[in-house]
Amino acid sequence: MSFSTDYIQVSEPYPGVAHVEMNSGELLALFKSFVLKYTLRFWTEFGLVFTKLAQEGGHIRVAVLSSKLPKFFTAGLDLTDFGGSPPPGSEADTARQGMAIRNYLHDFQAAIGATEKCHFPVICALHGHVIGLGCDMMGSCDVRYAASNTSFTIKEVDVGLAADIGSLAYLPKIGGNQSLLRELAYTGRKFTPAEALAVGFVSKVVEGGRDEVITAALETAKTIASKSPVAISGTKRVLIHSRDHTVADNLEYVATWNASALQTEDIMSSVNPGGKPVFKPLRVGTKL
Image (cartoon, rainbow, N blue to C red; front, side, top):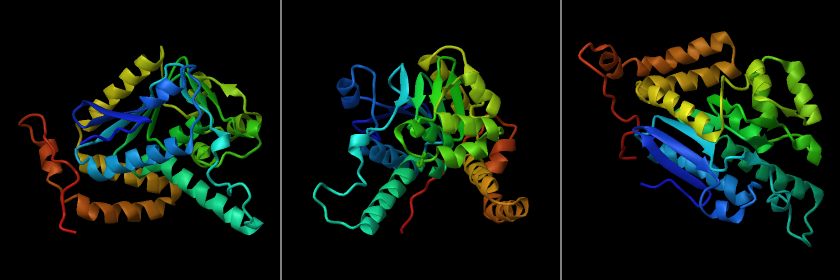
């Protein structure tokens, strides 16, 4: 089964590991100058790819997200492709225009946030310029590695808007320095991998560029893919719940979750001294 689209290339370099690369095929031919503007079609396909991987890629246990372009991970939005605006000549009043834009933004948020909805972890391999939407994308991923040549920018203030797809929602919960985060969001200045590491936006800086950071991400992905998918999926869900709830609420949540999950055969497979454990795919067919 192929999960690739014109804008997204999906491969499986190792069993259970999906490599999702942006900017492939048609898009590479279109932007020879290595300047990529993210359009409605791109982010729609981005969301659909991860949704399809989660729903139909039953054997996938972890994904690595990267860009095909060595110099750019992301290079901003195409502001001429704003799908929430009413068509020219529209007589829609302000309330209806506002509702159309709100629905557009919700769809955009859901597409970019599709990585968080996956039952498997997503590792973001950042390299080159990470401008605007790239900060939104990395926020909804589970693990973030940056190449030493990475340059980050929360760019939205420089085009007259507040970031609304994820940066201002995720990054305050990921990072530990509110003062620095606000400085970066208010000024739109570039910041380095060392700053991203210090504030907690990334967990590792890999010397080199695109190839080196992807290699490091895939190595971590192979380790994750070797674990029980029941355990990994449960851990992801509980961690996300913990971020948004109290300790007491999360303890209640994990108790309810594990009331079912502890009955998995994966526990005995994991502790079996007879060799490397083999786990069944997480997704199974139903009659529904």
